[in-house]
Amino acid sequence: MKPSSISRRFFGGLFGAVCALALSSLPVMAQDGAAPDPLASWNDGAAKQAITDFVRDTTTAGKPTFVPPAERIATFDQDGTLWVSHPIYTQVVYCLERVPAVVAQRPELRNVEPFKTVLSGDRAAIARLSTKDLEKILAATLSGMSVEDFNADAAAWIARAKHPRFDRLYTDLVYQPMLELLGYLRANGYKTYIVTGGGQDFVRVYSERVYGIPPEQVVGSAGGTKFGYRPDGTPFLTKEPKLLLNDNNAGKPEGIHLMIGRRPMAAFGNSTGDRQMLEYTTAGPGARLGMLILHDDGPREFAYGPARGLPDTRIGTFPQALYDEAGKRGWVVVSMKNDWKRIFAFER
Image (cartoon, rainbow, N blue to C red; front, top):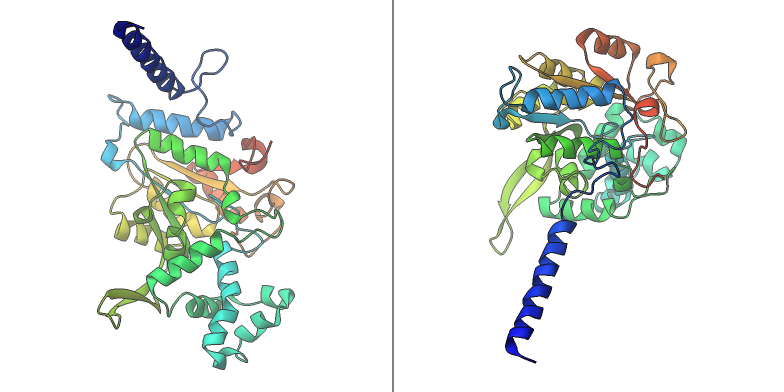
């Protein structure tokens, strides 16, 4: 075979492979030739329209509502907004399961409440623990170790822990419509942040893998750390039982100012703990978007409020007063039942 023939075949094959690779990376077009819907898990309606209108208004150059890329900030609560929070917050489950290990290191806690109740395994009694009891448990189970040891332990737990109802990893119970919303905003120049009442260090362990949100874009309730040296002289941080930021209710806008330094253009929540964040966000000038997720789909997820006559709850409370405030302030209330085609990625 002539060298020129070999060259033609080689470079022809290479050209074909490159073209195939390039074509494979292009967006898959719908059958009618239109671009795929970036919010495919959202039903057409007022909620979906509010999102697309907001993005168009704030990213179209020349419009009076145009927002420079540096100012495109969107904040998201996590529990009940990005993933399942019922029947109890995921991080609380983690802390409850850590109690035996903590008591093994500190035997004096064995007969002290609320640790005694947790060790009993009595689920009904555990469910009745007060907020102060849970705060004691969180302080004991989230401190006293190095940051690295905590990260490793939390990462190992979240990789195996499953939800009792769905028998799936907690990280499988992320809302598909919200993942699409995060991607849609980022594709349009928005920087997305998690602003959660949950533990900042806990959420940072998995936020990038699960949500595409890096650790530095997670604002949460933060405990103190203490700098020190190991016997070999290497520096490390120890987690301390000292609360620096309670990132819930009014703490959310305070945390946003402290950690982000810009007022968000859009904010997303699901409960009274998010009210001040939405108020702070939508009080700014220009086009703003405030959105609340209403859990009204018991068969597919959970139903609770007590807004609109839904069952009352201690976890992620959404009272009628918040629902009414949303109407007055122009916040969008998203009905899981009516606005989402599917809730989880694994749904058919």
